[in-house]
Length: 148
Image (cartoon, rainbow, N blue to C red; front, side):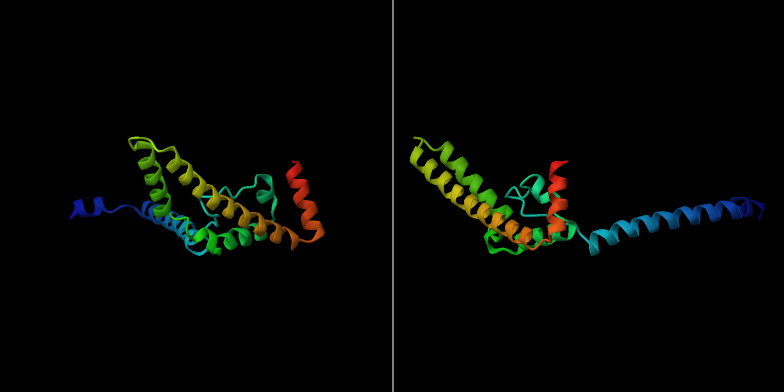
């Protein structure tokens, strides 16, 4: 019987263990809840959304609306991983063809340039629309942030 009582941790050890388990569960719950209920908003990955300092200078609320508007725009709906993989496969096929057909490469690059130009135009239109809805104070804060 003595061996069983020696194996049971003392009360302070049990309380310390329970406290550490509770702290770990709390931290995990906070991280999981943040990811589930407030995931970070990102723009479409294919197009450079940054426009450098301009996008980063937008107020948080406006930047989030801007990125959500880009995600919802039909221009960016076609930019999927599958589409990017297909474009790369087509480029690889043209580069590996024998004999090499320069006109096929030019046509492929031209088609991709048209898509990127269309996406860039949409991005700029959305950005101008978001900035035009800002107040004068918000635009002044943006300007100050850009000059930093």
